[in-house]
Length: 262
Image 1 (cartoon, rainbow, N blue to C red):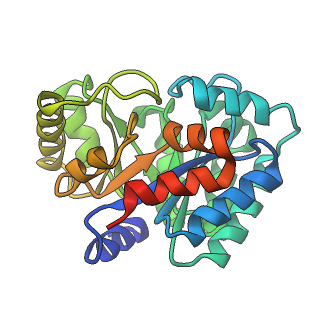
Image 2: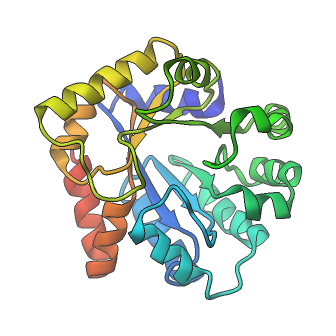
């Protein structure tokens, strides 16, 4: 079993569901983004999904797109991002950090080098939403060599045979998109929608031995509670960034604590 899966399974013994918070590296500045990550880790975030920004983040909604564009007004370096995340990984050994981006900037950096550097910096997971499994043979081989988990995504409209294939090949965890579309506003409210979500997660679990993370549209405590027993990680992205934009770290932490209080 992978390092990420072991970490998730061990932490789940004492928590009904784990927290993953999404932060855009470099937004609004590199220093402020790193300070924000540190604050989240100090307040008990189990994971941070660190997004290295790209100009066309196709899976992301308007809040995260705007943050990526703002961050890219600076000159950002993949190498410096990895070093900065590595410092956080060393300082907060009770949590885990995963790197999320898109293929273009990571390919330019070099995928083999990326995986090797992730291992050196204690980054155990890699999320590239626009890299299909079938085209990731080189990346998968490098990840196997260095003990890094490539994290695959499935959605409610993923064909059943492909969902089963990706679920059976998941390692650290499988990223289950809670609804169709991009990150941001929720449309999985109401009893019917929740039942549908639970059936979707149950169908994935039948094919996967890896833990399940659920994201896209989570904004309220009851949504997190309804995932308990059906998933292992609740992923908080646009809602957290909206709160941060409205009132800085204080407002962001208030939302985090509201959603993940046990």
